Image (cartoon, rainbow, N blue to C red; front, side, top):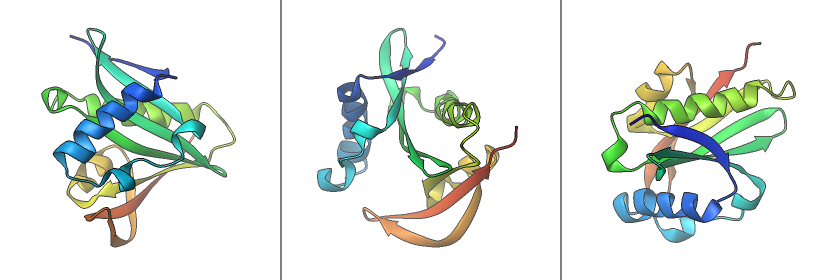
Amino acid sequence: MTPVIAETTDIATCVALRRKVFIEEQGIAEADELDDLDDQAIHLLATINARPVGTARLLRKGATGKIGRVCVLPEARGTGLGAALIRAGIAHFTSDPSFNKVCLSAQVPALGFYEKLGFTAEGPAYDDAGIPHRDMTLPLSR
């Protein structure tokens, strides 16, 4: 039961996973979750036995890579899949020398998870879709 993480053009499957986790499970409004950035993003899709179980979205902001919309279905949590998705995003940005750091917006309860992956929290907490978040960054070293 080894997960496979790969770039995908199947945005509909990624959005379906995000809908299950963010809208249905966490109660985030659809208007807050769905935006116009999916078409310009790179999407990572995690599968186990060819079944979609997680996703992340990668965006460019100048020389900064942004990892967002990271979600894992409940049955795949605790397996290291979330960390693997983040590492895959970091690897993507590290492979392109035009990026010098990676950022993300972390739900406050998940700060420790991202800190273990090398991210540092910056600035105060803020509300995003009714959930407290903090910005986090990771400088890229090559």
